[in-house]
Length: 196
Image (cartoon, rainbow, N blue to C red; front, top):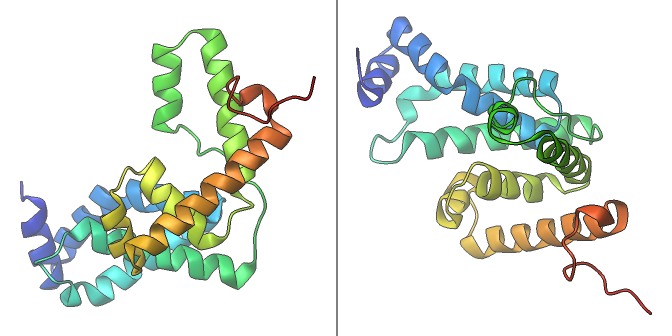
């Protein structure tokens, strides 16, 4: 079995089997990232198809001295943002079917905790739809995918300070939405102070 760098080299040389294996390795990540940015599974699948077509056509331009995943995230995020701009916002994000987090939640948490997690996921999905595409992309890459701020900046092709600003604005919008629409999800002492 070939390691990832060898698959990339072979695929960039035009070997179809290596490219197919690379797609199998990266498909879930590309679809998940596109989904988190677009908010719709069908749209995410369309974006992913376009990303892999671009990948096949442009893999020879990939700089092997850089991380492949960073480059792939960049192509995916840019394609998803372009897709959103082309069609306008679609509304709230729906949970992906069979998300790994859903399985973890069911295996490790009790019924009440699963219900709380489900409510929190629905709240996030609805509120994230109100974020600007670049804010949503920065938030998804940093807070959901777990990339460091510097890597998010490389993926998005912006300065780290711009990423921090996108994150600040996204968190502010999400927090305000939680406090307004889902006050029961805000820990005591963290929401708006009540006037007594």
